[in-house]
Length: 460
Image 1 (tube, rainbow, N blue to C red):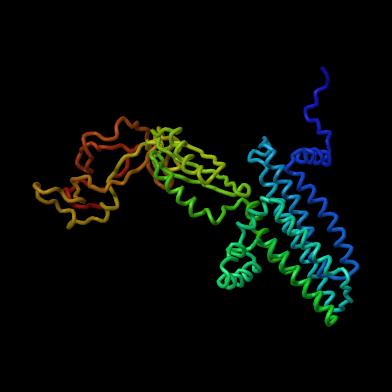
Image 2 (cartoon, helix red, strand yellow):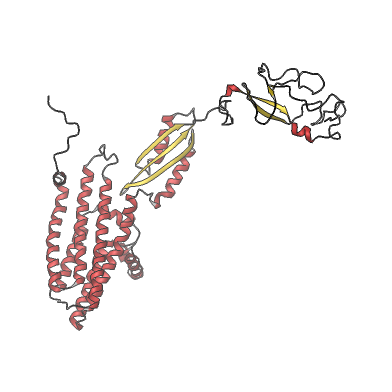
């Protein structure tokens, strides 16, 4: 035996963990082509940066940043392969699909930062425009265009392909779609290439190369060096406009929002689930995009007390699983309780229910407001009026009395300890008639309100 270290730290560093994961990915033959294109990309980017320095062209520098973005896209593709190899763990119960979403978001944001840097440099060049050398400008343009197109068409990048289709169209795509729609009306065979919308990465590569070709011709013909700065601004704006919708889409996925295009389908499925046999309520539903193409969600379902939980769970899962691949359903039965005296609307100032009694007493206010006209007894055949003295009345105000009576403040009453053996006796007592009072209040020697005169007449 030896010393047991409960919280021993891992001996591997972060670099060691990354190296191990890279070896895992590199062992797959599908990643060999991506690694080869990555190595070629680094070489091409190095040559293009040297040519940008020799030509002093900021437009070629802006176009070279697209080659650097291709390198980020290749890294994203490697991460996608790594996610497919990894299985969910205790720390990542939903898997590692969000890593490729994070990679797409980081790549598009870095491309936009590069575009902002080009705009800043272009603003400085508008003040003092340097001389542009066109010796390697056209060569660098064709090298970058060839490599970018070859990379985009040869490597199947699943994350970026999904984002480019799911995200909203950029302003460049919309303008090109308007032009190609007119062109396809003349030549219908081009509709399969340009419609419904072109690939944004191929489109920006072609548009950037076209801007550099125009720059080369204008500089060679008229030595118009300011067109290089204008082309750099155009390429930067096209880059920013193309990457921004992708950043917004991937950012919403990271924020666990519900995709807009599935909200209608989810509402329809929730309505179908709420009409299932035994289901009383569907609440706390939350659905979000876990990764590109996978939807996760959780929902609480309240069912009847006599319903079968497993049967309801199977039906709910069957309805929602067609759209939500990773689903968590919480089933709980109805928790209603029959109303009892203990749960009735009793005042909060009552200490104990057994120490209080609720009895009904005649309304003294009604008696005080009555007069000789309204209290006249009617015929015996008809029911007595509500405020007659010989009847207890219909309006009975409930009062609450305690077993152990305490002296009410402000009243000079003598208090007794008369037990409550019963609430009512033979009937209600009539003051001044000698009939025993039908209820007890614990007060002794209380002066009577009315004298012993004729019934129905008030005496002070």
